[in-house]
Length: 135
Image 1 (spheres, one colour):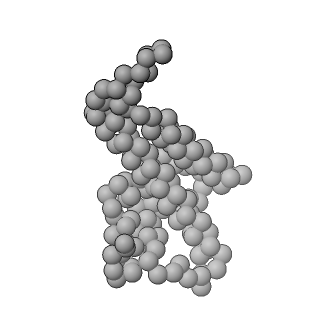
Image 2: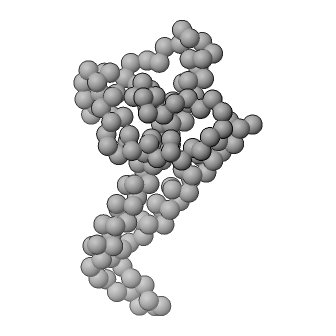
């Protein structure tokens, strides 16, 4: 039950981030006041919205990485001979985020997952495993 609840919380958090992104994608250069429409330069506002959307995407991808690492952990536990495949970020994620054995606060793990995406560490781990840059 705790595993299912943790999964639901992660999915809900990712959904909220995606929904907020949709709200922030409104045209920042067009202001509506009643029936009037005024086109003005809101470059800073648009840049701030783009930055927030990028942060939300990093968070969603980080949540997905943590969730996938947890699933792979269960798979390896069930069948130690299971192959993770070439080019996975699993070993890099497990350096910082341990397998969830019992209930604990998830936000530190999810924050670290987002940081692995933001810093490019997860991408570098995959590229090192593959021996070539991803295109």
